[in-house]
Structures are given as structure tokens and as C-alpha cells.
Image 1 (cartoon, each protein chain N blue to C red):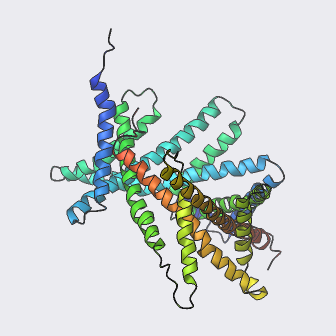
Image 2: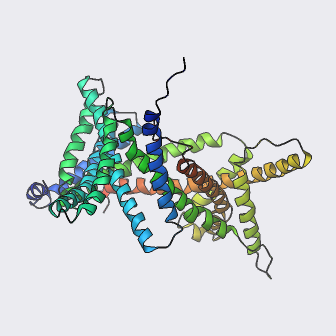
Length: 238
Length: 214
């Protein structure tokens, strides 16, 4: 298929010109949504879905399943010396096939079809815990351990104080516990609620900053697409 | 009469998948704390198996989408033309990309002239929706929304390159908002998210939650 594509595109610039026209038309199709939910927009949506499905499935099969099949053939030809390697290559294949059994609703081997899913959940949970510990919890806690002692003329400690108060406040903003009846429990609840309210303010500032960054990125994408239309396609901008 | 309990079925349907999930999960999790070459090899084999099974899971999802649209075509649904378009584009792209696995000329052409323009256009379209969302959000007059709006405006204006010429105070204010109060807010959320992930993961690894078994 690739050689067929190369033979068609061998003639100078035909495929590039075709590609620019296709990309420009698709861009206009998507922007047509600003007028109304048009059929052109839906065509563009369907093409995006179809392209993504085709691309991802082809890359996954070509880069993971083809090498696995080649390895299995090698293992089979090298038997009996390679039985352990063969078993190691067959197990994920069987677990993967067990997942595909979910496509057959009348299949009477629920245990078998759940095994692959259970494996994925187990490994996913372990990786998530490890990632949350080493990638978020510990580094963020260490980064929050800041000096609050004033040093000479440097006012950095005020920023440090704001970071510590804001981090703990934002954390406490998600505390939904019914307080007990004892006075110290009510006092504790009052303090944490108040601190959580301050934290909500810090969260809103964070959301505002995130939204602004998001807008900047999207505007950059819009400018890029408009530049493509007026420069690459129409040639109005030089 | 007491209902008969089928212990064999319970064992097969519940215990075997739970045992697989717990065993694999704990082995991989211990790999985070144990530094031993043999054990690291074992964990890398388990992870490689997980990658292969994840590909099958991905294919299962994609096959489900294709089956859904095939059923719509067979049933001659009103949305049938769109389903045909999805299936046709998926098949054509699949056949063009499969021989090279995403690195060939055909794959690059599809990426450059089909996928990227569509993706970039959809992202660009979001500018307008974010704009209307901000307008609606600002109509809610609370102190939280005031902070939200001030923060968004300061960061947005401070990001404009020529603001340094207008006043050096504006980019400095942006830097301060991003590096102090916004950082604190995000850090608090991240700590909560991390604790939530750990709690959910531990529930899975102890068999309290069993989303994989019927």
C-alpha cells in the first residue's frame, strides 16, 4: 500500500497540493459549526473519528501484535528448547484473546473473559499507586516544606507562607466530614472549614490561571489554522 | 428450602480474577520498593504482558465502535451515511498505515493533511466556547468568581509578549500569580488527587472493589 502511495505521489507536488486542499476544506468544515451544526461539521467529525480509529489500530497491530506473532513463530520452531519462552509469550496472548471474548455476548466463559480485565486492573492499580506516591504526593509535599523564617530584607518568606497556607487550604477545601458534638471537635471543624474557605479562593485563582493558559493555547491553534488558510492555501499572506 | 449455593461458580467467577488482579498488582507494586535485578526483570515481564493485553483492550474498544456503526448501517438508521463515512475512513487509513506502522510516507501524509488539521481546527473552535463559558461564569457574582476572573485576566494579559514594553509590572504580576497563589491551589488539588488515587488503587488491590468480575 505504501509503494502504491509512493508511485501515485512520485509526480512532483501532486499529493502535497491535494493534501493542502483537503486540509483547508476540512478546516472550513470544522469552522462551519460557528454558523450552525452543519452537515459539513458532522462530516469532519466522522472523518476525525474514522482516521483516529484506523491509525491507532494499525499502529497497535503493526508495532505490538506483529512482533509478538513473529516471536511466537520463532519459539515454536525452536522447540523443545524454548518451551519456557513460548509459555511466556502465549500467556499475554491468551489473556488478550480473553478480553476479545467480551465482543461475544453469548460466550459462556465469563471467568476466562474476566481474567484479562483483572490483569489490567491489577497492573493499573499498582502503577497508579506507585505513580501517585513517587510522582505527586512525595514531590509535592517536599516542595511545600518551605522556610517561613524572615531573612534580612528578603520578602520571599511571605510568598512561602502564602504557598503553605494555600496548599493546605486547597487540600482542606475538599473535606466533607460531619463534626462531632464535643467542643474541641466543633472548634476543630470551625478552623478547618475556615481554612478550607480560604483554600477555595486559592483554587479559584488556580482555575483562573489554568483557564487563561488554555485560552492562550487555543488562540495559538486558531492563529495557526488561519495562517495555514491564508498563507499555505490561498497565498494571500506572504 | 434453602437456595443452593454454587461454590464452584463463585470460586471461578469471583476468586480467580480477584486472585489474578491482587497477585499481579502486589508484585508490580512491590517492584517500586525492592531494588533487585531478578525482581526488576520479573516486573518488566509483567509490564510487557500488560502492554500486550492493553493493546487487545484498545482493539476491543475500537471493534466495539466499528460494530456499533455496522449495526446502524444494517438497520438503515437515519444516521447511516455518517456511519458509512466513519467505517470507510477507518478502513482506508488502516490499510494505508498498517504496512509501515505510522512511519511511512502514506502515514505521514494522513497525519499531516488529515488528522492534524482536523485536530487543530477542533482545538481552535474551543476558543469560542471557552469565551461563552467565561461570559456565563462571570455572571455569577461571588467572591470566588471575582478571584477567578482577576486571576484569568492577569495571566492572560501578562502572557501577551509586548506587555513588557507597556509596563514591566504586568508580566511580573502574572509570574507572581502563577508561581504563588495558583501554584498553591494546584498543589492542594494534586495532593487530594494523589491520595484519592492511592485509596482507589488499594481498594482494587485488596479486592474490596472488583469492577472486572461479574
